[in-house]
Amino acid sequence: MRIAAVILAAGQGTRMKSSIPKVMFPILGKPMLWHVMRAVEAATNQQPAVVVGYGAKQVQAVFGDRASYIYQPELLGTGDAVRQAVPHLAGKTDLVLVVAGDMPLLSAETLTRLVERQQVFSGTFTMTTALAQDSRGFGRVVRAENGDVRAIVEEAVATPEQLAIREFNVGAYCFRADWLWSALEHIQVSPKGEYYLTDLVEVAVKQGAGVQAIQIDDPAEAIGVNTRVHLAEAGAQLQQRINTAWMLAGVTLVDPRTTYIEPEVQIGLDTTIWPNTSLRGETFLGAENEIGPNTIIQDSRIGARCKIVASVVEEAHLENGVEVGPFAHLRKGAHLADGVHMGNFGEVKNSYLGPGTKMGHFSYIGDATIGVEVNIGAGTITCNYDGVKKSPTHIGDRSFIGSDTMLVAPVQLGEGSRTGAGSVVTKDVPDFALAVGVPARVIRKLEKRE
Image 1 (cartoon, one colour):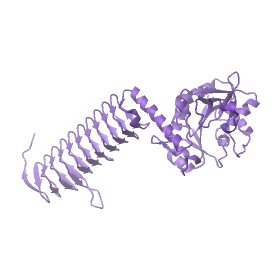
Image 2 (image 1 turned 180 degrees about the vertical axis):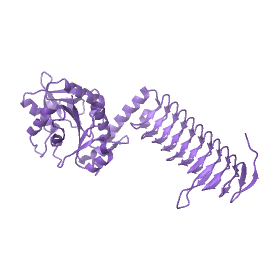
Image 3 (image 1 turned 135 degrees about the vertical axis):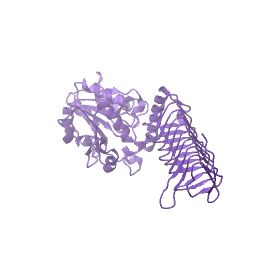
Image 4 (image 1 turned 120 degrees about the horizontal axis):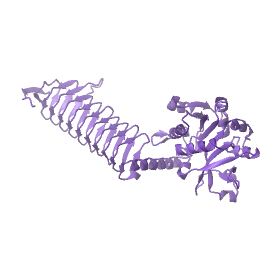
């Protein structure tokens, strides 16, 4: 059975009070629409069609060819939005899944169940509902004695008896396609001049056709986003879902309430995440790490058995057994090999530190390649920028860089070389040589150490 998916994402979202299209507001680092698309893709194994209107170019620029796009020229309601899909989908599909783009908590499991129910249903369409105490402005679902849906009554026009109904329309539907295309033409314009998709219940009932509903298992899935208050609520619920899944998968979150983990993060077994830690973007953590407290890791790859305390790691790569912090900053292109120790208040950018290297506190290493088991004393700085261009620094294996050394790039220090404390190195230092002074000069050769 052929299935198509339509996501309604054309509205501005005036209650957000922003020029940003509502579906582009971020939740856990991703646009709201990204979360909806991921659930729809998992449920249908199809590329969705996204109905765009306000901010269409912005939506398309972010999502590119991940979706096809249908433009709604005038924002005349959800019924009109789906009607724009008729020329694109008519005759090409058997079922049409329609989901609102501002429902980021709807799960793939719920949407899969919705589609599967409609596949065996001879009636017109299946919709999702939620049982809850807070209506959140959703319409009430009125059922017949046999369980079929008889009406969706909007809160603003509901009678006191209808307001007492605790079953609400969530806003996800699976339609029989041949019925949908013709039924859309029977929707009457509302007093506000819009065409509402929910009126299809009335159309079906007048035709004597059946409409059924499934209730979602988790009422939190019904949180739609119309204001920034709702945005925060949805983010908190999604974070709780992600954190719970990681704890069940063998990760220790010391305080889940203060742990922020975005949806594309991966974490290995027996890793411990301490409070006030944020794991963002496409971050990968191996097994048996200890992260935090007060740590931010963004788009980085961390090996196994690393310890990162109160530090910021951005687009960096740490191999195994690396220790960082507290109060360290790893910037884009930092690569710390096995067993590297990086002290507090250090910074590394676009540099490689070889296995076993120790970097003292209050040091800056930029655009550098550093060998095996190098000791970098406190206060060492690679002077890599002359105001026009960046230049590299190379430090050989088992070198010893004295405290407060300035390495003025481009410069190369050979294997086993040493600098005295406070040296300003402007020229290359040979293998197994000691350089001291300002500017530094080689004062003697050193005995080669095995």
